[in-house]
Amino acid sequence: MKIITAALLIALRSVAQADNDYQVRAVDFPGATNTYIFALNNVGHFVGAEIDSAGVNHAIFDDGRQLQMLKLSGPARENLGSLAFSINNRGDIAGAFTDIGGVQHGYVRHADGTLMPISFPGASSTQAFGVNDLELVIGVYTDAQNNAHAFLLRGGRYLNVDLPGGPSATTTPLSINDLGEIVGEYVTTPLTNGFGYLQQSNGRFALTTAPGSVPEGTFFISINNWQQILGAFADTTGVQHNFLKTGSVYRPFDLPARFGASFVSAQTINDSDSIVGYYLDASSVAHGFVASRVAVGR
Image (cartoon, rainbow, N blue to C red):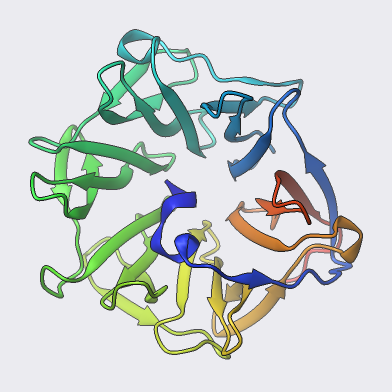
């Protein structure tokens, strides 16, 4: 999932600065110890996860009327924990759940409530990170040797979409748009953020290091249908900076100082430039946020 990628396991500090182009509100699930928002669609419905007082994570969903736990059916009805990472404009939600035997599976929950479990053949665990409006699904699976690999599920067929680089390299696809373009994190050196990557539908890809980033200190986390890319990089002092990349232009994104955030992780941008994510307060408690564009300019 998005909060356990290599980039977010590294101890980084984040500086919160005001951005007057956005109207920002915090999101906290009632009774939760921590709340994470991972994705939203073009009508503003969003998904994420909450952690309860027992430390168990549950997928959550806001349909514009209320923030609620996401009901999973079929083999995911009874689980040891669930997460929701992506929502498309059809109302399909992609995520992961842990079954009662302790095995993690991906899923796509359709708008009508039906559930499609996702388990890469032969994998010991699977997570679904993204689903687009064409119902292409991306995610990560773990093989028998405990190595992580990227996959694409298209028309019922599972494809390995690791970037070339040998067994020491890891590819983490985090977002897919309706053009079939995938962005994510490509790591060749352990314990680094690696490179942000953009992979075209034909398999061609490009690696990017953002301006101001340390070497192997950048990752991409979301791409919308305007080909705007959301990501982050670490500077030489270890501070993480979120950015919105439009073409070759990088625009910083941070929360207003009134949030008192010690760390900010922007997770998804939709086609209206709205951004969701989560932040940590001074006590390291996670809160979700929704940032809506006030003045749109491309």
